[in-house]
Length: 66
Image 1: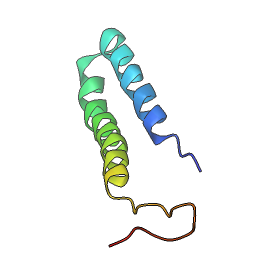
Image 2: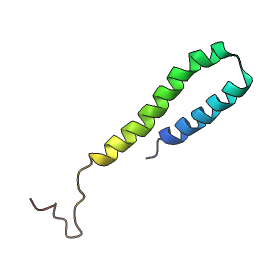
Image 3: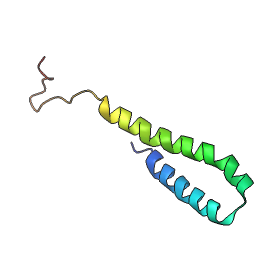
Image 4: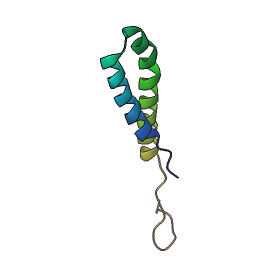
């Protein structure tokens, strides 16, 4: 099941870049921490999950030899 958290993080970063160009500094100060926190969590948790997955079973149904 796809959650689209990384895609949403990229869209939020692009949106923040647009806001930086057209809006006031006060709005940017409010939005920068939630956007960067979400993006860091989305990419960081994804990498953590990829590093700490269990090895898959082989074609014959047996797990990895230890």
